Image (tube, rainbow, N blue to C red; front, side, top):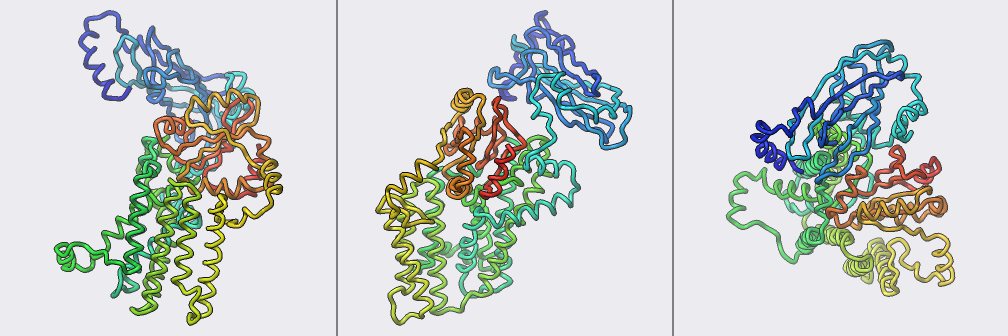
Length: 587
């Protein structure tokens, strides 16, 4: 039930509330309490009146003071769905485990419990809160063990374990670090992410954009254009990240629909044809004449738009630093600090792109034969990016065919069979031709592969043996209901849940690299393998992702033998085979 409906309920029943004895007063409907147990834990809760329920999302527990005492863990009952919201229909009780960063001893602690609920008869109460003054001996906190906690409340030990996932550690960095430390840390994260496949497709884009500026392009202008591109990219990443953190909606994933991908691929095809000299892309003369009055702005708006759209459509990858920032925003609601972290990370990701853009401007050849050749090369790269984008929405057979046609055409144009061409140029073109021909043969054989184009020539017996011995089989689910059924069916077993999507580049890396490693495949035979396919990004996929705190694929979650997620073992983003194998060995 959204806020607007709650507000209407308050208006509709406010008058009857004054004249009816059936509705409880707030202090009768909600009776909050808090006390300290023998293990220096705070036991707090709300005793609910008849036909009263409280919203899980509106319930908040805070330590107001002292500043050196904070909440380490909260054990809570499981809420249930009621009229579209997660609520507590029975009086909820929470066990709060504290941590003391100062000197241990008896301390006066002020705890604040905030909540909001409704009556089954139709009345919604306004948000309420109550503060409690408690004395806690923090020296006892060190003596509290997971086993003691388990006696107090039968909750899984994993909920209070000290080990945290990489995403949680990064989220804690934002919570506990200074402003400058956050900026520096996420800037370094961004530089590291710039070495991943998420950023690679942007290299020919920014290079082509710079080259397309034509004559009169200086190193200074190339630098300025590159900075504009990266700033626009950073703004897009930041906006998309903040929206995902606050509302759980992945804007980048929403833009992976076929019509968006086809449209953007078409833009790159148009740019490529322009670089081949088929036509010249230019604005109407009226706009050009106005823009020419201030030539310093010429081209910058188009570059900014391209940078913004490229960030949203070309590279929607999720890695641990990004997920950590989104978790922080989602948990605290502090969009400003989370946005600063995301923006700093985006600038770090864009730093190599600035270098590429400046290089494209500095070493751009003068008008002539070389300039024509350079334009053609970047035209081919633009077509390559268009095909790469189409790979998200079409079959691998189609993309293999398109790549092979592109490669054969490029090789012939580049002079693979031109005896008068330079030997180095002819050699490169001939190698591209041979590879593209092999790729085309793989397509005709029905087994296209970019890494092993002639893999279909392996003997049938060998292929059958390899497939039967090593192929990983995932059970695919697309909704919470399907996943719950599979989990229940495999109760008592080790389970791995892989969140994946057809448009996710890093997911394909997992399939083609990590999950093809023989040692990894052998180890994964110990697990029940489930794949949560969120390609559709529909309501079922969003609900499934939200339940497990997934902002976007790839994310891999492991379950223990009692179907409890091992949050500290969650893997976010692509992981190399050796590192992934080491991670599996810790389970």
